Length: 243
Ligand code: HEC
Ligand code: HEC
Image 1 (cartoon, rainbow, N blue to C red):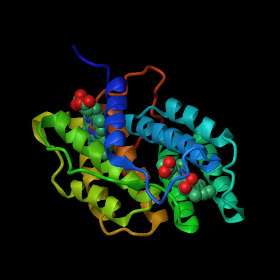
Image 2 (image 1 turned 120 degrees about the vertical axis):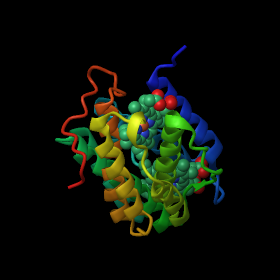
Image 3 (image 1 turned 135 degrees about the vertical axis):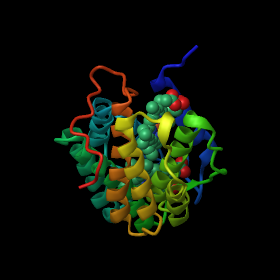
Protein backbone atom coordinates (compact mmCIF):
# COMPACT_ATOMS: atom_id res chain seq x y z
CA UNK A 1 0.00 0.00 0.00
CA UNK A 2 1.25 3.47 -0.83
CA UNK A 3 1.09 5.80 2.11
CA UNK A 4 0.03 9.29 1.05
CA UNK A 5 2.96 11.62 0.83
CA UNK A 6 1.56 14.12 3.31
CA UNK A 7 1.30 11.39 5.90
CA UNK A 8 4.81 10.23 5.12
CA UNK A 9 6.23 13.71 5.53
CA UNK A 10 4.43 14.01 8.85
CA UNK A 11 5.65 10.60 10.01
CA UNK A 12 9.22 11.40 9.05
CA UNK A 13 9.02 14.75 10.81
CA UNK A 14 7.69 13.15 14.00
CA UNK A 15 10.32 10.43 13.92
CA UNK A 16 13.09 12.94 13.35
CA UNK A 17 11.74 15.21 16.06
CA UNK A 18 11.33 12.44 18.62
CA UNK A 19 14.85 11.26 18.08
CA UNK A 20 16.51 14.60 17.73
CA UNK A 21 15.15 16.81 20.44
CA UNK A 22 16.24 16.82 24.04
CA UNK A 23 15.54 19.38 26.74
CA UNK A 24 18.57 21.40 27.62
CA UNK A 25 19.42 24.23 29.96
CA UNK A 26 16.90 23.30 32.68
CA UNK A 27 13.56 23.96 31.01
CA UNK A 28 10.81 24.89 33.42
CA UNK A 29 8.21 22.47 32.21
CA UNK A 30 4.76 23.96 32.54
CA UNK A 31 5.98 27.55 32.70
CA UNK A 32 4.29 30.03 30.34
CA UNK A 33 7.53 30.35 28.37
CA UNK A 34 7.77 26.62 28.06
CA UNK A 35 4.20 26.40 26.81
CA UNK A 36 4.77 29.22 24.35
CA UNK A 37 7.88 27.48 23.07
CA UNK A 38 5.94 24.38 22.19
CA UNK A 39 3.44 26.43 20.22
CA UNK A 40 6.35 28.11 18.45
CA UNK A 41 8.08 24.84 17.90
CA UNK A 42 5.17 22.96 16.43
CA UNK A 43 3.84 25.78 14.26
CA UNK A 44 7.30 26.68 12.99
CA UNK A 45 7.94 23.02 12.22
CA UNK A 46 4.62 22.75 10.40
CA UNK A 47 5.57 25.77 8.27
CA UNK A 48 8.95 24.30 7.46
CA UNK A 49 7.62 20.93 6.36
CA UNK A 50 4.73 22.44 4.38
CA UNK A 51 7.18 24.68 2.53
CA UNK A 52 9.47 21.76 1.70
CA UNK A 53 6.49 19.81 0.40
CA UNK A 54 5.55 22.83 -1.70
CA UNK A 55 2.26 23.40 0.07
CA UNK A 56 2.08 27.18 0.49
CA UNK A 57 -1.58 27.26 1.67
CA UNK A 58 -0.74 24.93 4.56
CA UNK A 59 2.31 27.03 5.44
CA UNK A 60 0.18 30.19 5.41
CA UNK A 61 -2.33 28.55 7.73
CA UNK A 62 0.33 27.67 10.32
CA UNK A 63 1.87 31.11 9.91
CA UNK A 64 -1.50 32.64 10.72
CA UNK A 65 -1.55 30.73 14.04
CA UNK A 66 1.95 31.85 14.86
CA UNK A 67 1.19 35.47 13.95
CA UNK A 68 -1.82 35.43 16.28
CA UNK A 69 -0.18 33.49 19.13
CA UNK A 70 -0.10 35.27 22.49
CA UNK A 71 3.20 36.86 23.40
CA UNK A 72 5.74 34.93 25.39
CA UNK A 73 5.63 35.84 29.06
CA UNK A 74 8.42 36.16 31.52
CA UNK A 75 11.20 36.73 29.04
CA UNK A 76 11.53 40.46 29.68
CA UNK A 77 11.89 43.48 27.40
CA UNK A 78 14.72 42.06 25.31
CA UNK A 79 12.49 39.08 24.58
CA UNK A 80 9.54 41.25 23.55
CA UNK A 81 11.34 42.61 20.51
CA UNK A 82 12.12 39.09 19.33
CA UNK A 83 8.53 37.97 19.87
CA UNK A 84 7.33 40.92 17.79
CA UNK A 85 9.83 40.07 15.09
CA UNK A 86 8.69 36.46 15.10
CA UNK A 87 5.10 37.56 14.55
CA UNK A 88 6.25 39.90 11.77
CA UNK A 89 7.97 37.06 9.88
CA UNK A 90 4.90 34.88 10.38
CA UNK A 91 2.83 37.65 8.76
CA UNK A 92 5.34 37.80 5.89
CA UNK A 93 4.75 34.12 5.24
CA UNK A 94 1.00 34.49 5.60
CA UNK A 95 0.91 37.36 3.09
CA UNK A 96 3.91 36.57 0.87
CA UNK A 97 3.30 37.45 -2.80
CA UNK A 98 5.32 34.47 -4.03
CA UNK A 99 6.58 31.11 -2.88
CA UNK A 100 10.16 32.38 -2.93
CA UNK A 101 9.32 35.26 -0.60
CA UNK A 102 7.59 32.87 1.80
CA UNK A 103 10.58 30.53 1.67
CA UNK A 104 13.06 33.25 2.61
CA UNK A 105 10.71 34.46 5.38
CA UNK A 106 10.63 30.87 6.66
CA UNK A 107 14.40 31.00 6.99
CA UNK A 108 14.15 34.33 8.82
CA UNK A 109 11.57 32.86 11.17
CA UNK A 110 14.05 30.21 12.33
CA UNK A 111 16.84 32.79 12.59
CA UNK A 112 14.60 34.89 14.85
CA UNK A 113 14.12 31.91 17.19
CA UNK A 114 17.90 31.53 17.27
CA UNK A 115 18.58 35.20 17.95
CA UNK A 116 16.30 35.23 20.97
CA UNK A 117 17.80 32.02 22.35
CA UNK A 118 21.24 33.52 21.94
CA UNK A 119 20.17 36.81 23.59
CA UNK A 120 18.43 35.33 26.61
CA UNK A 121 20.82 32.42 26.93
CA UNK A 122 18.06 29.79 26.77
CA UNK A 123 16.64 27.52 24.16
CA UNK A 124 16.63 24.00 22.91
CA UNK A 125 19.49 21.59 22.55
CA UNK A 126 19.08 19.20 19.66
CA UNK A 127 20.68 15.80 19.68
CA UNK A 128 21.32 14.20 16.38
CA UNK A 129 22.13 10.76 15.12
CA UNK A 130 24.10 9.91 12.03
CA UNK A 131 22.61 10.80 8.67
CA UNK A 132 20.43 8.05 7.19
CA UNK A 133 21.97 5.96 4.45
CA UNK A 134 21.41 7.36 0.98
CA UNK A 135 19.78 4.32 -0.64
CA UNK A 136 17.88 4.83 -3.84
CA UNK A 137 15.64 7.74 -4.63
CA UNK A 138 13.51 7.72 -1.45
CA UNK A 139 16.67 7.25 0.59
CA UNK A 140 18.16 10.33 -1.05
CA UNK A 141 14.98 12.27 -0.12
CA UNK A 142 15.09 11.14 3.49
CA UNK A 143 18.72 12.22 3.58
CA UNK A 144 17.65 15.60 2.11
CA UNK A 145 15.10 15.96 4.87
CA UNK A 146 17.62 14.99 7.52
CA UNK A 147 19.97 17.67 6.16
CA UNK A 148 17.26 20.34 5.92
CA UNK A 149 16.22 19.60 9.51
CA UNK A 150 19.79 19.88 10.82
CA UNK A 151 20.18 23.24 9.05
CA UNK A 152 16.85 24.38 10.49
CA UNK A 153 17.91 23.39 14.00
CA UNK A 154 21.22 25.09 13.34
CA UNK A 155 19.31 28.36 13.06
CA UNK A 156 16.76 27.71 15.84
CA UNK A 157 19.34 26.56 18.42
CA UNK A 158 21.36 28.26 17.19
CA UNK A 159 24.09 25.71 16.53
CA UNK A 160 26.87 26.20 14.01
CA UNK A 161 27.64 22.48 14.16
CA UNK A 162 24.11 21.40 13.21
CA UNK A 163 24.01 23.90 10.37
CA UNK A 164 27.29 22.68 8.94
CA UNK A 165 26.47 18.98 9.36
CA UNK A 166 23.27 19.52 7.39
CA UNK A 167 24.86 21.62 4.67
CA UNK A 168 27.68 19.13 4.16
CA UNK A 169 25.21 16.52 2.94
CA UNK A 170 24.79 18.57 -0.23
CA UNK A 171 28.51 18.31 -1.02
CA UNK A 172 27.67 14.95 -2.52
CA UNK A 173 26.65 14.95 -6.14
CA UNK A 174 22.98 15.46 -6.90
CA UNK A 175 21.02 12.53 -8.29
CA UNK A 176 21.28 12.40 -12.03
CA UNK A 177 20.03 10.63 -15.05
CA UNK A 178 17.26 8.05 -15.03
CA UNK A 179 16.10 8.71 -11.47
CA UNK A 180 15.12 12.30 -12.22
CA UNK A 181 12.78 13.66 -14.90
CA UNK A 182 14.52 16.09 -17.23
CA UNK A 183 12.70 19.20 -15.98
CA UNK A 184 13.67 18.43 -12.39
CA UNK A 185 17.43 18.19 -12.80
CA UNK A 186 17.88 21.95 -12.59
CA UNK A 187 16.37 21.96 -9.07
CA UNK A 188 18.66 19.16 -7.91
CA UNK A 189 21.73 20.91 -9.31
CA UNK A 190 20.81 24.29 -7.84
CA UNK A 191 19.99 22.73 -4.46
CA UNK A 192 23.39 21.08 -4.20
CA UNK A 193 25.14 24.26 -5.35
CA UNK A 194 23.35 26.30 -2.66
CA UNK A 195 24.14 23.61 -0.08
CA UNK A 196 27.83 23.73 -0.89
CA UNK A 197 27.81 27.52 -0.49
CA UNK A 198 26.00 27.11 2.83
CA UNK A 199 28.69 25.00 4.48
CA UNK A 200 30.87 27.93 5.52
CA UNK A 201 28.06 30.32 6.46
CA UNK A 202 27.89 31.35 10.09
CA UNK A 203 25.82 34.58 10.16
CA UNK A 204 22.22 33.71 11.06
CA UNK A 205 20.60 36.13 8.62
CA UNK A 206 22.71 34.90 5.71
CA UNK A 207 21.82 31.34 6.68
CA UNK A 208 18.14 32.36 6.71
CA UNK A 209 18.22 33.58 3.10
CA UNK A 210 20.25 30.60 1.92
CA UNK A 211 17.88 28.20 3.63
CA UNK A 212 14.91 29.88 1.99
CA UNK A 213 16.50 29.47 -1.43
CA UNK A 214 17.27 25.83 -0.72
CA UNK A 215 13.77 24.85 0.36
CA UNK A 216 12.49 26.67 -2.70
CA UNK A 217 14.41 24.09 -4.77
CA UNK A 218 12.92 21.21 -2.76
CA UNK A 219 9.42 22.57 -3.35
CA UNK A 220 10.15 23.44 -6.98
CA UNK A 221 11.14 19.89 -7.72
CA UNK A 222 8.21 18.47 -5.79
CA UNK A 223 5.91 20.64 -7.92
CA UNK A 224 7.73 19.68 -11.12
CA UNK A 225 7.50 15.96 -10.35
CA UNK A 226 3.92 16.11 -9.12
CA UNK A 227 4.77 15.33 -5.49
CA UNK A 228 2.73 18.31 -4.32
CA UNK A 229 -0.54 16.58 -4.92
CA UNK A 230 -3.05 18.75 -3.13
CA UNK A 231 -4.99 20.54 -5.86
CA UNK A 232 -4.96 23.80 -3.91
CA UNK A 233 -1.27 23.49 -3.19
CA UNK A 234 -0.07 25.67 -6.04
CA UNK A 235 3.48 26.56 -5.27
CA UNK A 236 3.19 29.92 -6.99
CA UNK A 237 6.11 31.46 -8.79
CA UNK A 238 8.74 28.74 -8.52
CA UNK A 239 12.06 29.41 -10.10
CA UNK A 240 15.01 27.04 -10.17
CA UNK A 241 17.56 29.72 -9.40
CA UNK A 242 17.83 31.99 -6.37
CA UNK A 243 17.47 35.69 -6.78
C1 HEC B 1 11.47 35.87 23.03
C2 HEC B 1 12.57 34.97 22.96
C3 HEC B 1 12.36 33.64 22.28
C4 HEC B 1 11.89 33.44 21.01
C5 HEC B 1 11.48 34.47 19.96
C6 HEC B 1 11.90 32.00 20.83
N1 HEC B 1 12.34 31.37 21.96
FE1 HEC B 1 12.43 29.37 22.23
N2 HEC B 1 13.10 29.67 24.15
C7 HEC B 1 13.27 30.89 24.76
C8 HEC B 1 13.63 30.68 26.16
C9 HEC B 1 13.91 31.77 27.18
C10 HEC B 1 13.67 29.27 26.37
C11 HEC B 1 13.96 28.53 27.67
C12 HEC B 1 12.55 28.28 28.25
C13 HEC B 1 12.50 27.76 29.64
O1 HEC B 1 13.53 27.43 30.21
O2 HEC B 1 11.35 27.69 30.16
C14 HEC B 1 13.31 28.67 25.08
C15 HEC B 1 13.22 27.32 24.88
C16 HEC B 1 12.85 26.73 23.69
C17 HEC B 1 12.68 25.31 23.50
C18 HEC B 1 12.91 24.26 24.57
C19 HEC B 1 11.66 24.16 25.41
C20 HEC B 1 11.81 23.09 26.44
O3 HEC B 1 10.81 22.56 26.89
O4 HEC B 1 12.95 22.78 26.79
C21 HEC B 1 12.29 25.11 22.22
C22 HEC B 1 11.98 23.78 21.54
C23 HEC B 1 12.22 26.42 21.59
N3 HEC B 1 12.57 27.37 22.51
C24 HEC B 1 11.88 26.61 20.27
C25 HEC B 1 11.69 27.86 19.71
C26 HEC B 1 11.34 28.07 18.32
C27 HEC B 1 11.15 26.99 17.28
C28 HEC B 1 11.22 29.42 18.15
C29 HEC B 1 10.87 30.19 16.93
C30 HEC B 1 9.71 29.80 16.17
C31 HEC B 1 11.52 30.03 19.43
N4 HEC B 1 11.81 29.05 20.33
C32 HEC B 1 11.52 31.39 19.64
C33 HEC B 1 13.13 32.13 24.17
C34 HEC B 1 12.64 32.36 22.88
C1 HEC C 1 15.19 16.51 -8.20
C2 HEC C 1 13.89 16.71 -7.63
C3 HEC C 1 13.76 16.80 -6.12
C4 HEC C 1 14.43 17.63 -5.27
C5 HEC C 1 15.49 18.67 -5.60
C6 HEC C 1 13.92 17.35 -3.95
N1 HEC C 1 12.98 16.36 -4.01
FE1 HEC C 1 12.08 15.45 -2.43
N2 HEC C 1 11.06 14.25 -3.67
C7 HEC C 1 11.14 14.24 -5.04
C8 HEC C 1 10.24 13.24 -5.58
C9 HEC C 1 10.04 12.91 -7.05
C10 HEC C 1 9.62 12.61 -4.47
C11 HEC C 1 8.57 11.48 -4.50
C12 HEC C 1 9.28 10.16 -4.65
C13 HEC C 1 9.31 9.41 -3.36
O1 HEC C 1 8.26 9.00 -2.89
O2 HEC C 1 10.39 9.25 -2.80
C14 HEC C 1 10.16 13.27 -3.29
C15 HEC C 1 9.81 12.92 -2.00
C16 HEC C 1 10.33 13.52 -0.86
C17 HEC C 1 10.05 13.06 0.47
C18 HEC C 1 9.18 11.91 0.87
C19 HEC C 1 10.10 10.70 0.87
C20 HEC C 1 9.39 9.40 1.09
O3 HEC C 1 9.75 8.44 0.43
O4 HEC C 1 8.47 9.36 1.90
C21 HEC C 1 10.75 13.89 1.33
C22 HEC C 1 10.80 13.82 2.83
C23 HEC C 1 11.48 14.84 0.50
N3 HEC C 1 11.19 14.58 -0.83
C24 HEC C 1 12.28 15.85 1.00
C25 HEC C 1 13.00 16.71 0.20
C26 HEC C 1 13.78 17.83 0.72
C27 HEC C 1 13.91 18.19 2.18
C28 HEC C 1 14.36 18.43 -0.35
C29 HEC C 1 15.25 19.62 -0.38
C30 HEC C 1 16.33 19.72 0.56
C31 HEC C 1 13.93 17.69 -1.53
N4 HEC C 1 13.12 16.69 -1.15
C32 HEC C 1 14.35 18.00 -2.80
C33 HEC C 1 11.95 15.07 -5.80
C34 HEC C 1 12.83 16.01 -5.31
